[in-house]
Image (cartoon, rainbow, N blue to C red):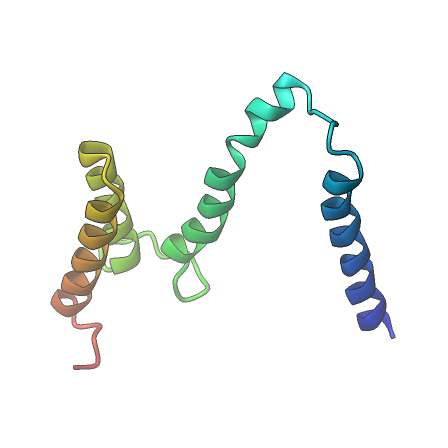
Length: 108
């Protein structure tokens, strides 16, 4: 029963949040909140990506054999140098697969 209660609770919260924008279209956030909301996508993506880089097997892997960490660091460098999303994604993926191959972690 608690699972269904949790599901319906999340449904209600999500509905109220989304409906509030239609119910009060003239409502505006204070300037400080609007500025803070600009950081939400970066914070969410960081929270998703960083644990996978630092703990790919479920435990800390801060060593040179961690292809996830090395490719992620290289992608950060590429992003800082080029400021190009496509170059960052392509460089990160290419370096990840090359590192996995070089470290003998690919099944081929």
